[in-house]
Picture 1 (tube, rainbow, N blue to C red):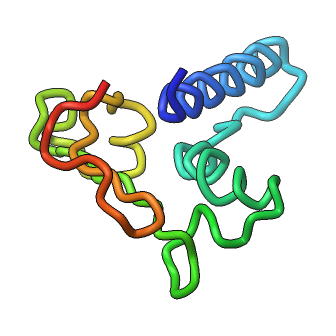
Picture 2: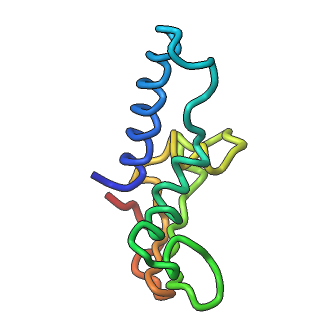
Picture 3: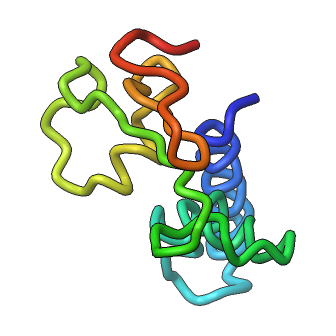
Amino acid sequence: MDMITQMRIHLQTTRLTLYENVTDELLPRQNPMTVDQAFLMGTRNGALALNRTDLGVLKVGAKADIVIFDTNRLGLLGWTDPVAEVVLHSNVGDIRDVLIDGAVKKTKRPFG
């Protein structure tokens, strides 16, 4: 299972669990997890859990692992929040380019 799908499933499972608690009046009514939190879980926080400060971030000295999405694909058209677009609406077929440690590994062709 790809990382995008894992982020989406975790986000939906967390929301379902906490919304069930809300409907049972066990918790106040609030959004239990944002798409930004799900995205960080799958990127920066995932790297920090592995004690890898060089992963999950774009900065000098980091690994430069980058995924570029083709936002002209049908399922990604019209969204204004790029993080929500990736977490909620994308799939591996929307990935256009992949760079690993700064080197291009895939470019301009369907993935998945």
